[in-house]
Image 1 (tube, rainbow, N blue to C red):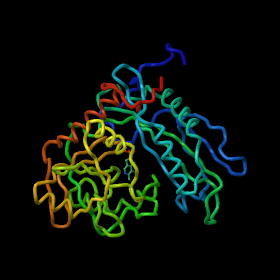
Image 2: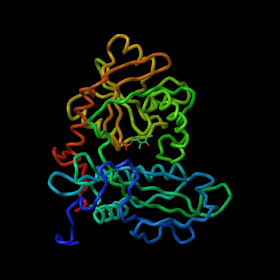
Image 3: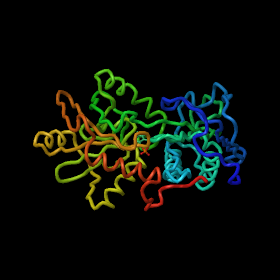
Image 4: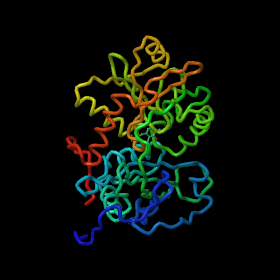
Length: 353
Ligand SMILES: *Cc1c(COP(=O)(O)O)cnc(C)c1O
């Protein structure tokens, strides 16, 4: 595309209040896989339309489905960039391995992804805090009731303009431990971005909502003792003398925001420990006044400060009205890099134009 044909981002008329994930851009990427035809077929970028899929497609019966989530931003200099997209495609491949689905060529998908975002960049709202949410996903499409890995798959990428996660500013959120269900177990599918993990977590999410909390803090599924993650976010704890985050033991999704937060904390000279953190340790630290801050990290909200944490009858409160100090600092740093306001010292941005 020549410079003249590239429209400035934000040209598409969008409603003031964008509800997350309800509006989709004009184009989608689609690539089919068929093991009898040598694997991945030639992909297309086409206008968004309904799919026609056989009702026996194995995804509907045995749930081979994975997804990814990342964002593209309008930078302050007028360019458009994605945040660490290569990491999402690497993670797509590791999820695919776990679910016996085919892996993709990372460089090839990155190129197509860049073309797709460039084509629909007018869909990135030109308003503060807005972005284009990118949703790659893969499903098994082979029609068959036999239980085995399918021979046919479909990989698609969709785009959705989204508003700021916190329209009224960076607000702390209340979370609670839900103990009678588990999200994922070590050696299970927890570290894959498998659609089924979400199906398993909805009941806990409902319970938290019912009790007036916005997210679930999941404990490990074996001892019900160690904190794992929050909804679709990884978790960080700031103790008086330490910053810690649960180590990846197989049941936690390895978040790219988590990875970036760890790097930034190291850049700033903090020691950050990846280790098991028990909920009892948190309660004990809280009672001594040594639990200073809890926050989540994930693509959607970037950083989420926690205002309250409920565990059985214990209610711990932190930053009830204002976000925690470190959470806010990290939020400003990460979004600063994402919008091109702060130097991208680790080359995390991939420009689409
Ligand atoms: C996607 C996801 C995260 C966050 O990952 P990011 O790459 O930082 O967006 C955390 N936990 C779960 C369960 C997730 O699905």
